[in-house]
Amino acid sequence: MTNNKFVLSWIEEMKAMTQPDKIVWIDGSEAQAEALRAEACSTGEMIKLNEELLPNCYLHRTAVNDVARVEGRTFICTSKKEDAGNINNWMDPKECYEKLGKLYRGSMKGRTMYVIPYSMSIVGSPFAKYGIELTDSIYVVLNMLIMTRVGNDVLEALGDSGDFIKGLHARADIDEENRYICHFPEDNTIWSVNSGYGGNVLLGKKCFALRIASYIGRNEGWMAEHMLILGVEYPDGETKYISAAFPSACGKTNLAMLIPPEFYAKKGYKVWCVGDDIAWIRVGEDGRLWAVNPENGFFGVAPGTNEQSNPNALHTTMKDTIFTNVVHNLENNTVWWEGLDKNPPANAIDWKGNKWDYRTYNKADKSTCGAHPNSRFTAMAINCPCISKEFSNPAGVPISAIVFGGRRAKTAPLVYQSTSWQNGAFVGSIMASETTAAAAGAVGVVRRDPMAMRPFVGYDMGDYFAHWLKMGTIIPNPPKIFHVNWFRTDDNGNFIWPGFGDNMRVLMWILDRCEGKVDAKITPIGYVPNVEDINIEGLEGVTVDTIKELLTVDKASWLEDVENIKAFYAQVGDRVPQAMYDELAALEARLKA
Ligand code: OXD
Ligand code: MN
Image (tube, rainbow, N blue to C red; front, side, top):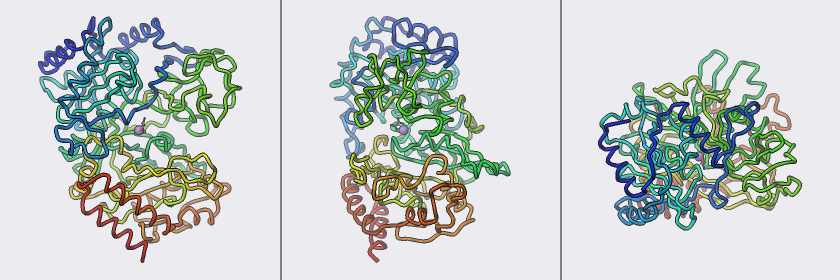
């Protein structure tokens, strides 16, 4: 497959440690993928679904103790602890290699090691970075074939170079106590052991495209961000692009695939999805920021996805998809999940592989769900009805606006605009989400999640803030930075804003601001829309008064937040740039004025 001595000697070393019976190189061909699917079905690792209703679709169940990313067992292994920072777990690289080496030793005996050469971004493009993942899981191979660009052309593009990310994954015993997801940014290496769950084992995604890439991006002067990218096409055919960061479980995939409200659709507006999770962003020759989605597919949360919430995602999953931990509908050999429709199958198997009686389902008790709340679909981006024609453009798309968002019951207004790049980076650094509380109206616990990157920055968070500030000095024509909150609630705990497709109304204000087409009101936190500038035409139940309520800036709750931010900055530690403290002090002063 290759004569690259860096690749071959590393594989030899990993082989000696893990001792597989054989090694199979993944070439990206359909014939090989088909043979692997058949093999996975023969062992029960995957179940082939109804070929007529869901062509080329499969179901997989993980172990019951292995259903999500494990932040507590995720480590950044830099030689100096302070380079990983206080927010990350750290392990000494030498100690980590030794510890995990013991877990890997002989773990592939009787098994096959698959070698997956893959590219994040278009092979050969200026954004492209290459990786090789070694794994003993066919499920991982088949997911990587959807999520990344895999095959011989990657090896050709790599040539003799040693510049690739070395990923090793072994299922071992799926032992929770010995599960580790470890990153060695100084060695371009990722080691994952004792898990089979996507976020821990599809090493191109969170591990490479965010944690390792954020480290590389800092050194090389670009950004790897936890952002969707979407394009809004105007009736005259021009398209403007927005990238947006939200913490996990805030509806990123839904926003990325938004269906315009009828009011806009009738006029000819369209929304196109470039990416739903990760953006790699560079300064282009024209001085603007340009972004690509380095992935090739979507690893989306299934529950709650339906014809109303996200028809585009649902249609994307109708073929060539791997479903993980959803309900197996035995009536027609298809799949089901909570929130898909109101017809749970009568004859079904739940995500744990047990017979499931939907009548035992109780919304308040997650353990009665048929599909795991974090069950997933792995689907091809090109199967998405609203995939952007720029999805495969190696140059990426120019970004007009960066949007940050969180889930805040009271504090953040529907939308506000920062006053500069530095102020916008500050707005990103104070991003937060509240856990949804059980009692109606009660406000949950605030988790600060800067730029939605808390679990994904591959180095010190303070240095990451500094990188954002530094980027501001090298972008001649920077995008404007905004913050949105779709989740404000009334006194009874009900969401005030309808969300979903109607979020486009807010995006249009954002784009109008970028064009200088609309005025705004300055407040202590930044620019807020004039009430009449959020278009509510055709929106039932939302009045000018509703918008007024959604746009209020409550100084008392912001001052409370300021205290929480101070505590968080202190936790991040002494590398938080002075400019961020200056922004915080200025915010406090404006709130108190
Ligand atoms: C994801 C996440 O899976 O952010 O994308 O958790
Ligand atoms: Mn994500």
